[in-house]
Length: 159
Image (tube, rainbow, N blue to C red; front, side):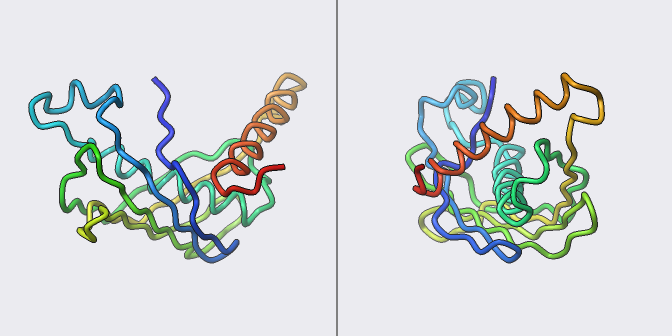
């Protein structure tokens, strides 16, 4: 199962912030198992939405320098109200600092009624697969093409 948790990027300023949203539909596969009679978005996926938004901000900030971006650390994670199907989660991330291949972010999510759903501080690490050899370089090129095409869709900046 692959999760795409940011459906739209509403505003961004490289090196500073990104604002986006996730529309939670009842048809999302994981909702069938996560409290079947009271479906809500799992907390770990709310956190992942913040991480995904942070990765988009870092891509925009670094000129897509890192084909692979992974979560290195999450701290001060706090959960608020439930995210139920039919609602929109607004996601806001701010870049706190960068240090080489590592970046630190603050993020928060809230539902379309303004209730906070999640907040956290987290660290992302970026790297390229090219260091592993020619196959890694080819994979990097495919990943970068994918990320740039997805960015164009999310931001409405279609090529």
